[in-house]
Amino acid sequence: MALKNDHYTYRVTWSAEDGEYVGLCAEFPSLSWLADTPETALRGIRKVVEDVLNDMRKTGERIPEPIASKHYSGRFMVRVPPQVHRKLATEAAESGVSLNRLASAKLSR
Image 1 (spheres, rainbow, N blue to C red):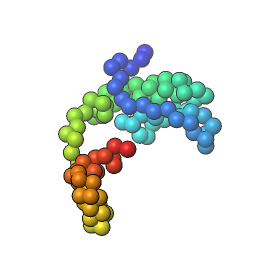
Image 2: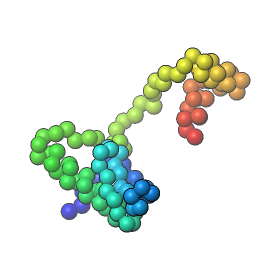
Image 3: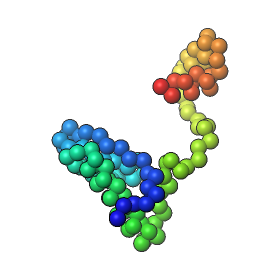
Image 4: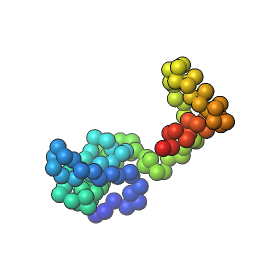
């Protein structure tokens, strides 16, 4: 049975170490599935997540909310060394933009 309303974040990548594709789920970083094809790796990791969710429900464990379902305010704080702060503030001033806009542009790359 396929996992219904599966909004978890999956990724399939090549593992040179294993010589196979590996399926991963961001919300369950300890889980993975190796397979010969990317499609099989995706099906495999989705099945593993389904099995883990079923076990979590049975034991009453907290089920992780999918990243795609979470609300994000668009704000987060980043601490940097004072010299980096000064450099960025100078770059922003020279570019005629706010430090926030400069940092946002750099993070979006």
